[in-house]
Length: 241
Image 1 (tube, rainbow, N blue to C red):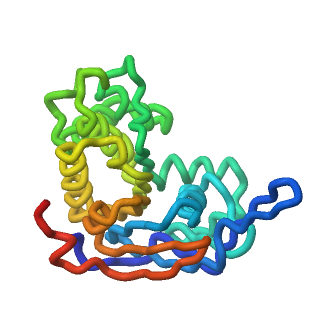
Image 2: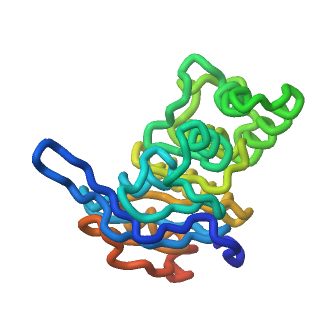
């Protein structure tokens, strides 16, 4: 799945994250070093409290490390001011969450268009990119449908299209199939593999071994530290469900 990995998109070096809670300091991440290259599909796994959510928040520029460095496409993120960090989130990072986070009274087309409007993309280009995005996720014929008129799998595919429409450097996925039945889960995972084969870099947090095996590499956390980082066997990554 995916082609040859290219230049590094994400580089973490010695990342630590501690939270102060009254008299208690919680060490959420411990000396995390990680390189993810262009075109990789990486699953992040670990038990509750292992640091998965904290790591994803740092990768998404929603939080800063206490120590260490995080470079996204060669630019150091931990020292940026909030204005620049917000710009990076909008331009370079796509997010897909367990909850689809679609506007309920807004069509699939408009949901996908929103980030382009916020970015000031001209109307003609917006239309072209939205239609291309909906086509890529197989929902050209659902452009005018509201989220309530779509299945769970279709709603998550709209969320993927919305994340990809800005052509981000990396797509961050937080339990993207957590709310889906098995058929819809298969639909979304097949889409993510297709998006990865077309060159997108994906980082996905999941608690499910079966879901993680659809990635090309699995990074496991425990107590805030990376305890393993291994490629998925080809037969598993491409295995039929």
